[in-house]
Amino acid sequence: MLMAGLGCGQQEAWKILVAVSQHANIKLREVADAVASATTGQPMPAELQDHLTAAVQAWQARNEQESSG
Image (cartoon, rainbow, N blue to C red; front, side):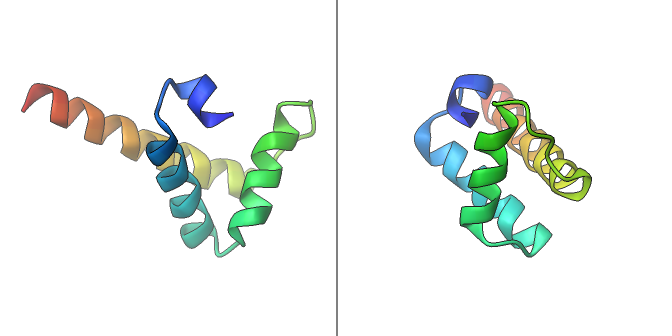
């Protein structure tokens, strides 16, 4: 889901999921389930959404820095 939505690779999507799991203190499996469920219209818990947003923003910032450097 992340790969399709963000245009990132498998490793980047994995790193994003791991970051969310670690920062939210939620099992990786639960994070992945929440992301997958959100694509079917189930709302993602707000706290988890906040952590996902932060992880995606960090990934985007790293990509921009690597592209310009």
